[in-house]
Image (cartoon, rainbow, N blue to C red; front, side):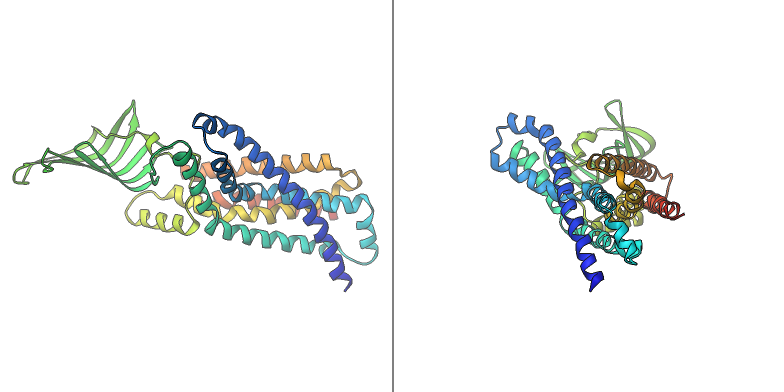
Length: 363
């Protein structure tokens, strides 16, 4: 009974501080997002309802981004407050160990991680797509285009273009087929390229095969293979960039896995999709890692814990974590680190650091 009361008291304090921290961080994020988008909303005279709908659809993604910081700050302030008011000392005097005091916090960190993992699969991709649609189509008045990075079909004048995979950040295309037709829609030429790189406002194709046909009969007249040649593609890397999306946020974990497997089976490089897939799995567990790391930090600071210190420590640790995580992902995208290492590296390093802090504080 005593432990049940204690757990409820610890969790009640933790949840109160977590809600405050989460509201503050989400509010700041939305404020920054508002000032980034205000020019679009004003330029296109967007109704207030559309603006509100856009920000509402951004909230699930924002919550998952800031939840680790909020968890860290909440556990820091919870245990720091217990230390400052001598409640932690009283608990120890009553024979309650630190492990028993903090176990409900760690359990909640695990529950949060699993909930956010499910949200990354079922909620976030849909809301990110909807927010993107509102901004690009309903606010800016653009066409209702489904932006994709694989299996792209485009028609331009008398040409049909098929692209197996587009990499707008790297300014590369893979698996290109360009079909040219005459006025009666008889095929005149087909160009196939293994890949292409955008240089000097032109596409330089690699391993290009050009086939010329007789429009009247459809017979093959000529076939030519070149290691490199310029391709007359009616697109640029900007045409494949998704507005408001920096990575594959609008794809679920299962979609990323399926796409990576399919690309690997077809001989293309699936590294970016594999890294993003593992990152989407690893990111929610940052909540558990931050709670684990926040416990020894709060205990070591003791009676010196304050709101200002809690905010400063949380933001500093969070900044280091996100910088390290982004750097590891960059190494993963380049192929320097395996996808698993790139995605989970920051969590593992911070978990080890938290374990060291526990041992140091107990020593």
